[in-house]
Length: 154
Image (cartoon, rainbow, N blue to C red):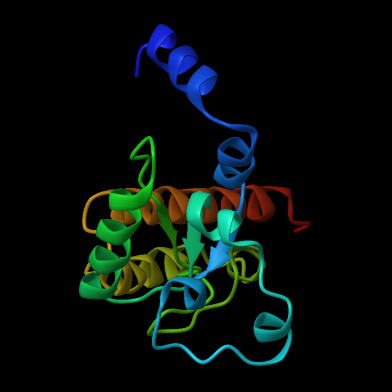
């Protein structure tokens, strides 16, 4: 996006819309069939926070993501799409240690072997950006492991 278009968009957005773009909510707030219990059910955010939220965490499945995105885009005044986040490194369908834990194994080859497995876990949900994001995370993990190994005492 060109700088002048971005400046125009920001000048047209209300304060609530700008705040909303900085909020990440769990996917249950966008799932009409979800039963909200505990703190999530007792302390609902104001409706405008849900309406203008910038990202969603924990929604799995292409159909569910597409459904939430299309409903969100229809009602959003500036049609800014939601970002869908998944904590894939900690586990989606397969669980691996966090990047620091992997790096502390002092076994970068093993870390590299785990990466393709996690790629296949995230790819169905977000074929384009998810794959690239996870690829970068794993590249960083391998770099951390390499730095730790190179600084390890003999």
